[in-house]
Amino acid sequence: MNFYNKYILPKLINLVMSNVVVKKQRPDVVGQATGVVLEIGFGSGLNLPFYKNITKLYAVDPSRELYNLAKERIKKVSFPIEYLQVSAEKIPLADNSIDSVISTWTFCSIPNPEIALREIFRILKPNGKFIFIEHGKSDKNFIAKIQKLITPIWKLFTGGCHMDREIDKLINNAGFEIQKLEKFQQKFSFLTFLYKGIAITKK
Image (tube, rainbow, N blue to C red; front, side, top):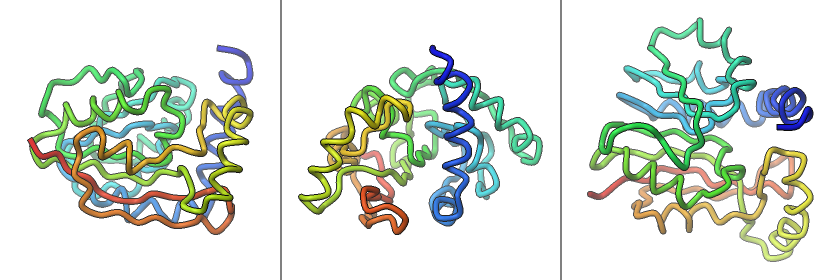
């Protein structure tokens, strides 16, 4: 891990993901989680204030530096948190052991999203919920072409962030049934197209 990725990028991610526009989306997404929850891309713990009815949180994130930024937020919650310093492609939990999985602006940067989604499907209980808000490929062809053009350079400075992934297609291909899905353009950036919804496991 180079100096930028270890010392600068975590603080930059924490700053960018703390902005008001992003924060407005968190309560509606995170508040739907119940029971034993796993959060993919826990980062600096920005979702913590919005959990309502959970009994335990597994916090998955390969970046110890980002997790260290969450320590003050962790002190303020009443539920137990277990940190798993792993990538989402290999989650060290048993099959059918999780009630809800949360992912907020994470799947853009997972190296192998197909594998990660299969892991999420595996650990979720039957009819378990995968609750997500992600950015990805725009439904406007012109913008999608710009996203594809920019991504190879963009990901070098943003922790591997891909702007052009088809999030709903990835979720469907992993075996989930999408129950609810909203697609919309983010107001502060014409290149940011959001996918927000809930998918369930049919096992």
